[in-house]
Image (cartoon, rainbow, N blue to C red; front, side, top):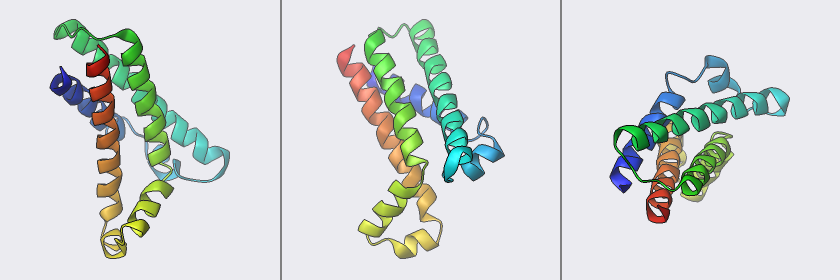
Length: 132
């Protein structure tokens, strides 16, 4: 069940991060103040909704036997971690800690960002599968 869950969560992530993310959200989600937080939380809410739909599709179409509490916890985990990662400071701090200044200067932050998101998705899929 882990593999099916991970694929569903990853597709939901891609949909939410690319075609369903507005230009405003992308430009402002890491910004200071109310505007930044509104953009960030709207983007995280998109992830919550799309992930919930993806899990519901997996349950309905694939017959996945998912514990509803585990699924809800996984969806919340994805929304919260996505919001924090997209504030950008965790990625910047990691790249400083890992001594990746050159990688950062050549577009590496986007790769580290996506790796952090995928790690959070894998943890969610493992938790949902393990608790179901």
